[in-house]
Image (tube, rainbow over all chains, first blue to last red; front, side):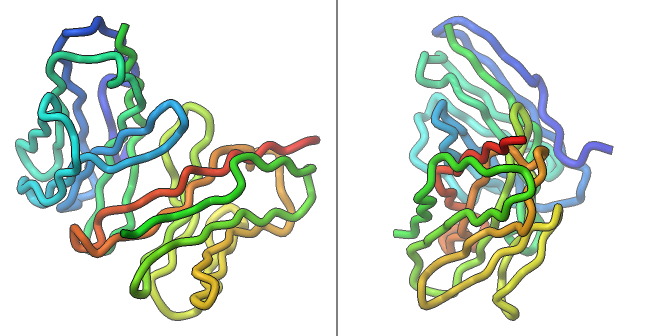
Length: 111
Length: 115
């Protein structure tokens, strides 16, 4: 069974479009995260939710909106996509300790 | 502010040789420290972690790391590298803002293994 899954794995879209990435974890964890990995492989946290409540919100354009319908799911919606949004987006989850389990990533390409 | 430095962007070793990847952190208190590995096109897999206690920690795939408070370092080692170890390696520290749930990553070290 996949612990942290993301859909889609690849996403190619035009500038200005709106898209969503979905994440699900079956580990029973309370906390979920979104990270962005840029073209130089640099990883930076974007958001974190604990039991559906936003607890970390880094300096991210408000075109990015996370939504957590329940503690097992954390989706990322991106409005008005820009070229600079092209990256790999990773979802992760954790429980009481800060050991995080990562999903396989979603490679977003904005043309 | 917390930060993590991985001084080596790219390292190449021969298969069977020993390996040490360097990681230095900037942090005011005892940190939570991690090493993750990312194979091409894959997600991140946790190799090992340090929270407290014994400063030499063992991880998966034969890796170990040593926490040295005096040097603010958490270097990753492996006595004999296998070709399958070729990957990107990330050191990370857990930041207290966000209840230590916020991981700050280094820029990564890409490991290439020669046969």
